[in-house]
Amino acid sequence: MDITERIKQVRNEIRHAAEKYGRDPDAVNLLAVSKTKPIDAILAAYGVGQRLFGENYLQEALDKMAELARLDIEWHFIGRIQSNKTRQIAENFAWVHGVDDLRQARRLSEQRPEQAGPLNLCLQVNLSGEKSKGGVMPTALPGLAHEIAALPRVILRGLMTLPAPESDFSLQREPFRRMRQLLEELRTQGFPVDTLSMGMSDDLEAAIAEGATIVRIGRALFGPR
Ligand SMILES: *Cc1c(COP(=O)(O)O)cnc(C)c1O
Image 1 (tube, rainbow, N blue to C red):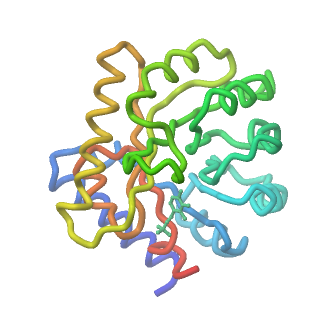
Image 2 (cartoon, rainbow, N blue to C red):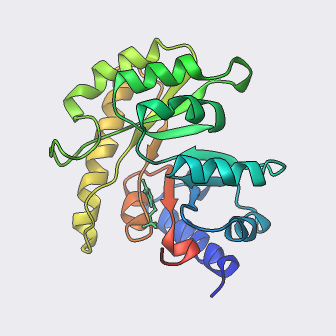
């Protein structure tokens, strides 16, 4: 199967899952995760209408952006944020999904170019409680959301998570259900958040069932890495 076929298949899966759980299929955005994949793969996906692309590695992403500058692509940074790299992230991406502390958010805001419009941020949530994993503890979310709301050049759009892989559907759903609750709590507290970035190639249906608005799909579109 080529990328064109796989993209159609993933779009169908998204539509079916949305309909199955009573959601509007257009409310689930497909972010094509093109890390480690060549320009040709991105062009193939672009050729069948894909516009949102996610990259993890900054230098690789910048090289691709330079080559694809004439295309109408919305770039999302989904990798780990190194504090000495925030300027290039702030200057080149439309979205950053893995924000997990105030210092990063402050730097991104300070370094976002005036003409670019605000940078969209998602806070990465640590649901496992393991300190070694990236992400914000759920109890720290309201405080951090409050501080970020005061920053001028970024806009807090919602939450992102990367749960441990599970093959059982109901186990896949649990962390996504928790994410839905956490987003709802932020909304109740008055934060205008609208985004749940969750679901990858192997758990996209479970994520859509619990309200994902951006699914981040790599292997199911581009093949194994
Ligand atoms: C690589 C990656 C993905 C895509 O994962 P697949 O299993 O290839 O669909 C999604 N999100 C993040 C943060 C990633 O690093």
